[in-house]
Amino acid sequence: MGLDSLDYIDLVVVIESNFAFKVKPEDFTDIATFGDFCDYVISRVNSKELA
Image (cartoon, rainbow, N blue to C red; front, side, top):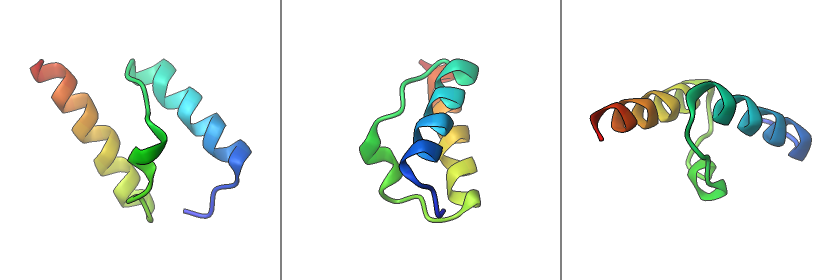
């Protein structure tokens, strides 16, 4: 997605504070597009709701 290290940190902080789940660095290895990112967040939110 063309993120530098500060962008990555900002993004992780926003995700964790708004969606109440922890992001692991290895989760981002397969994310290449904004669509991949949205799919990742949606799947994590859905799995949290099912738990």
